[in-house]
Length: 98
Image 1 (tube, rainbow, N blue to C red):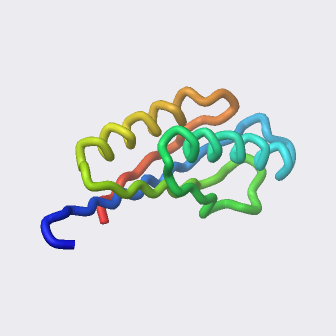
Image 2 (image 1 turned 120 degrees about the vertical axis):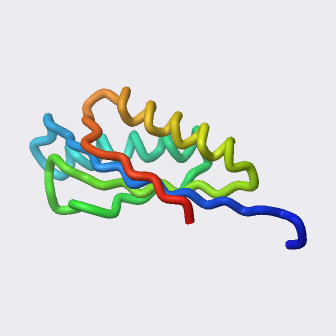
């Protein structure tokens, strides 16, 4: 790797799923959102918090690339996708560059 830059960003997204009445309801919502993020942005997505709570979750979304502006753009689009997703409410989104 001579002159190539690699950028890594991590989004931590805390969500509320107000209508979920069971873990099955929650997982159905979360699975759909995770798949949309994965397929649209080729991102790594994992549920990393509140796995045993019915109405809360934390998703970690990792993006890697050589163009920082593209990663910033994709991060903004992921934020918008989460904020516009039916059935979930975003309570916080944090971004780190690694």
